[in-house]
Length: 384
Ligand code: NAD
Ligand code: MG
Image 1 (cartoon, helix red, strand yellow):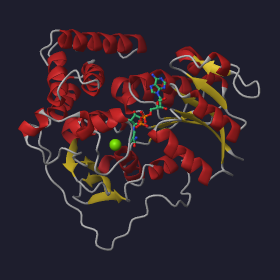
Image 2 (cartoon, protein in one colour):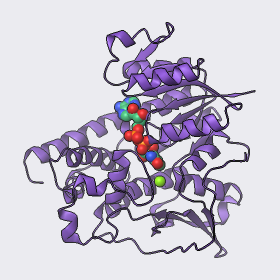
Image 3 (cartoon, helix red, strand yellow):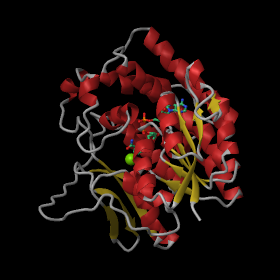
Image 4 (tube, rainbow, N blue to C red):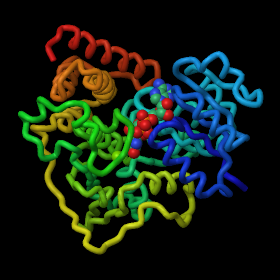
């Protein structure tokens, strides 16, 4: 029996990597839904390749000529259309490769309609970890991390006794600015930040890797996914991106997961959840392999320290951290603020009181909007 899968964010970096995995294992998967924010033509091409799949274009409306789709296939449109498509498609497993806060409701909709969730969209967990995991638990559905570090930890921990864990060591490439001085960082342009040394990813997460906000989000993601407090999650800079994360056990032993950097391996592991299926992805050659490790520099990269602060403060601080960062990153990409302005804006937004927030979807979405408005107000003052 083929596994029915939905691929959300099918035109993105995660989505395209997922399609490689699906094509490689064509006999094992039946795609039932592809979604994207725009670029309807790419979805129509996928629907022609996989005729059983529904398509959803959630952002700008598809061109009038497109709305009939191909072969009379209905195109689900808008945010509500995407949520309806997730509910209608009958997926057994949904891969969420949407970028940003927009991925939260689709994650919940997938679980509510009885689908397992393979989660690349870390924002779902950062914003609403308790809600997402509780929704899954109530239905006995797995949430399978796709983020390479969390996939590594997930697989390392599955083989071990839960209470034997001491701490999780999340690796970080350090991004393109690992060796840049604080002065040089002030002048960094989008093109510099988009040149990631080891991973090819979408623009938002690539900027986050340069500022280390990505690692900050991942620390919060790990805390929620693995029920750990901030003191039990450490970040280790490892420029080669070969060790994807490690777990230190109470007896002192450290276990690591290694592969060459290729997102298709954690995607493969998530799509084949429940079995160890052979794969061609990420095979590591040990000839002449050198691995190095360093301590992260939270002075040059304040986004990491801000994430720990938000995690410790709890409430809606992680929601505000994520939203302010999303807003600031798009301002940086639009040439409106300096690279160092990203962390300055986030620090200023996090000065407000985000404590005591409820864990329901509406309160979380409101906090997200409020943090974006706060970031917008700071930028309109022209301070950054
Ligand atoms: P991307 O920008 O390449 O692709 C994003 C996809 O989401 C596109 O298909 C786009 O059409 C869709 N999308 C964007 N905004 C949307 C919206 N408002 N509503 C619905 N769909 C929308 O991003 P990416 O690099 O593939 O990253 C996707 C997610 O996976 C992010 O949460 C990122 O942090 C996470 N992630 C990515 C990688 C990677 O290697 N790219 C690794 C780990 C985790
Ligand atoms: Mg990652």
